[in-house]
Figure 1: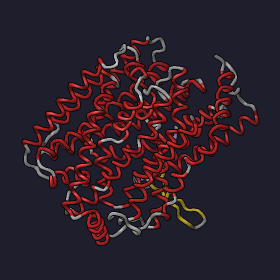
Figure 2: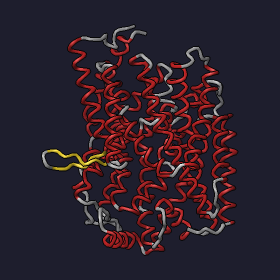
Figure 3: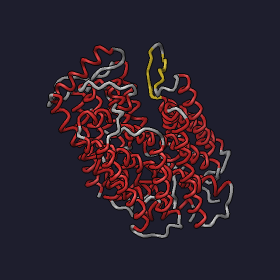
Length: 496
Length: 77
C-alpha cells in the first residue's frame, strides 16, 4: 500500500465527497413531505418508484463492505469466496414472490418495520420487541463494517489517522438526521453511477494490462496450487455443501435486515418491487466482476498484509492518480448510502417496537419522528466508536453472528404472510432456540460460518444460520401443532 | 377491521393468483436448482472467453434469472 500522501487523488476524492454532502442536505426538500412524521422521514412517504428504488436497493444491498470484502475473500481462498454470486441471484425470485405481499400488508396498516407487521398479526409487544432487537443487533456491526470499508480507501490515498473518518461520519450523521431516507436515496444515484464507472473501467482495463482473463485465471490457479489447503479456482468437493448453504442462507436472510426491509417498504408499490426483482440482478453482474478483482490482484502480483486492502491496492497499481481518487470516492460514498439506511432502519425499529410499546406509549407522531432521528445519530456514533476503539475482527465476527440471528426472524415475517395458523408462543420459542443454537455453534466453530454436522458417520458442512433455522422451524411447528391439537390458547384469528 | 375478514382476503388473493400463475411460478425454482446443485458446475472446462466454466456459468445465470422473473411477471399481469 502506498503510504505517501497522494495529492491529486485526495483532491478528486474531496471534491466528490463535498458534492454528495450538498446532495444529502438538499434531499430534505426533494419530493417534499412533512419530515416530522416517521413514515416521511423513515420511508420517504412511500413514494419511490421503480427507478429510485432500483438505485436505493442497489446502493443499500451492494455495500462498500461488499466491494472490499468479496474480492478480499476471493483473493484469499478462490472459488469459495464467489458464493456471493449465487446468493445475490437466488435472492431475487424470493424478492419477487414474497416482498410485494409484505409491502401490501405493511402499507394497509401503516407498518414501518418488519416488527410492526409481526405485532400487527400476533399482537403482544414482547415478540415484536424481540424481532426489533434482533434487527438492531444485526445491523450495528454492519454499519461498523461500512466504516471499515471507508477507512481502507481513505488510507489508500495516503491519509492516515481516524480524523478523516470521523469527519466523513459526522457529515453523514447530520444529513441523515435532517433529510431521513431521502438523503441516501438521492446519494445512491451518484454512488451507483460512480461504482458502475469504476468497475467497468477496472474490468476492461485491468485484464488487458495483465494479458487477458485466461492469464488472470491461470495466474490464480498457479497461486492457489502453491498455497494449497481449501483454496483454488474451483471448489473442493468438501466445500460444495458449505458453498450452497451459505448462498441459500444468506439469500433468505438478506431481506430480513432492517436496511433492505426499509428500502422495500419505502417503494411506491407492488409493481415497483416486482420490476426491481427483474432489474436488480444487474448489480449482481457487477458484483461478480468485482469479485474477480481478487484474481486480478493475484495476477498483478499484489501483496498486502491485510486482505481487505486488496481492492484499493489494485486500483493504486493500475489507475492514474485522478482516477484512484474517483474510485476511492465511489467506495467511500458506497459506504454512506447503506450506513444511512441501516441507521434509519434501526432507528425505526427502536422507536416503533421498543420505545413506544415498552417505555412511552403516549408518544405523539412528531415525537416519534424526533426519537427516531436522535436514535439514528446514536446508532451511528455507536458504530463509529466500534471502529475506532475495537479491533476490526470484532465487527466482522458480530456481523457473521448478525446474519445467523436475523435469519431466525424469517419464519415470523415470511410464513405469517401465507398462513395464520402459527402460534405466537411457538414462533417465540423457535426464534429463541434458533438464536441460542446458532450462537453456540458459531462459538464452537471459533466464529466461522460453517459447522460440520455428523450424521450416520458422514460429515455435512452446512451454514450455521440454516442449521439454527432448522431447529427454529422444527420447534415452532411442533409447538404450533401441539397447541392447535390441545386448543390451549385462543387462535390469533379470533378478534380481540 | 376484524382479523377474520383479513385472513379471508389473503385466501381469496392466494387462490386467485394461484389459479392464474401456477405454471410460470414454478419457473422461479430454476435458479435455485441450477445454482445450489454445486457439483454440476464446479469445473474449469468448457471455458469461455478465458473464463472457467464455474465462473461464466454462474454469471450467465444472472441474466437468465432476470429473464425468468420477467416471464413470470408478464404471465401474472
